[in-house]
Length: 168
Image 1 (tube, rainbow, N blue to C red):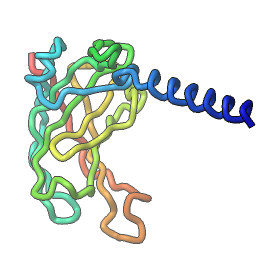
Image 2: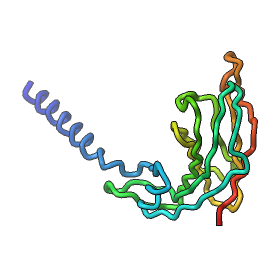
Image 3: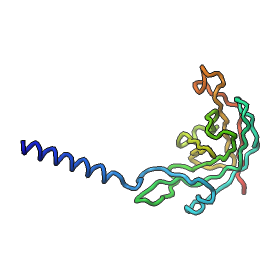
Image 4: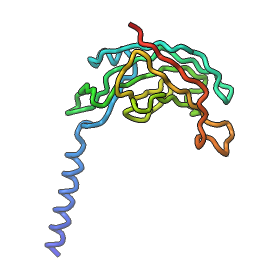
């Protein structure tokens, strides 16, 4: 019985040690800045891209406005600090305005899928693409959810191609 209790205590201590040492300030996690200003403050060079179209009528009747996109070098966390690293591409942020930012009726994607490091997360103010390389011109597809609720996201509809041109 004593051996069993010692074994259980040993396993419990080992488990707690593993859990606490693996909580390492987000080491290896990817991050992105919320704004251009934050990206600059993080030490990244910010490059801006102007879209050839800014106003869109979405399939659900919502109007959307796209603003000047900006980029920063991707970063990960190491010992609680940000490490800029081009190995993981760039954060290409496309700010947009939408009456209901929580609605998920559209997304953006890179037209050149061979230049995409990761899939793109979208938050309430911007969509973030991950190109591997930055070019003077980057084409982005506006993909929308089918308004037929039986199909929805199973069949996306590409309604526009937006050409973003680097501001020199």
